[in-house]
Image 1 (tube, rainbow, N blue to C red):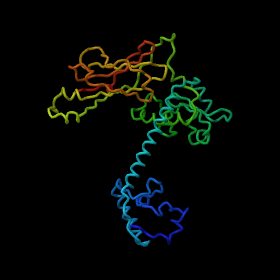
Image 2 (cartoon, rainbow, N blue to C red):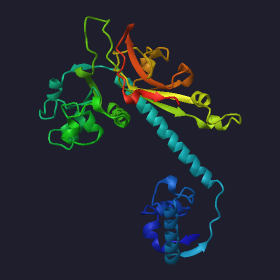
Image 3 (cartoon, rainbow, N blue to C red):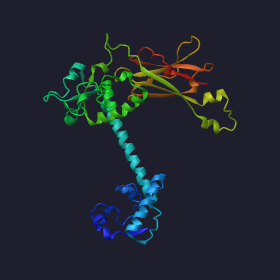
Image 4 (cartoon, rainbow, N blue to C red):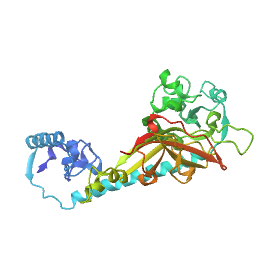
Length: 350
């Protein structure tokens, strides 16, 4: 319906609070409520039942308050325009996220100065002459330009001058989180940390790396890489492929195995600790030695807080249903120790 709102020019007139609604189809914007250009339309196709009830409420409100002077003929292209704008907004968001990830990865590789925990502690914001630093996942960031947040006694001052990775992740100053380290993070926390890390690496300047995050130095370039931590494996069955095959038997063990993909995840080492990874599998029954399931994987592919690689079931020798997965790092042709076997790193193909 088209309503005459001239009596409320102080609300809908030029430059007034709701001037965006004047002369336009605005059901969506009124019901949400929203003055965003994307919402100034009559498209409510994605509304929930509660939102549709809100539309009816406002329809009745406006009908009793203002005079209806006509009926609006829908513009066939309005919905299309809204859909296109929404798609463009999503694409812009995706591109921004990709750009942020690329910028974070570039910063991630830089080592900068090497600081000990004691050196980092000097930059806790208590000395106005020194910059304020925080430690996050081994990176040391200068947050001095946000002293109102990270300065001594400020809301996030508890993060300054220390490795506050887990406290930053949970946005808290609770001592229990301040005392935690990345080593005891759960899988969900590691995934969540990557988002926080990208934000901080692109917002603040990285000035160095915590010495605890660097590879342990020994006799020279032939040092053995550290052991890979946090290895987990999961089985991803693809029943859709079987469903599309009229001759497939859903109870056929061999067919189910062939449709499986094993996803292996682990915590990648820092830049310089490894130049490649190798994934191995060992049957849980018997005394067979671990068997290489992949070629050497370039470590440069795995720079986020959680590495992930999928292996076809065809890479597993037949005859064994239970497998434990290992990841080993290599650097300069020196191979580190196998990752530790845990219940999380075991799978069953049948």
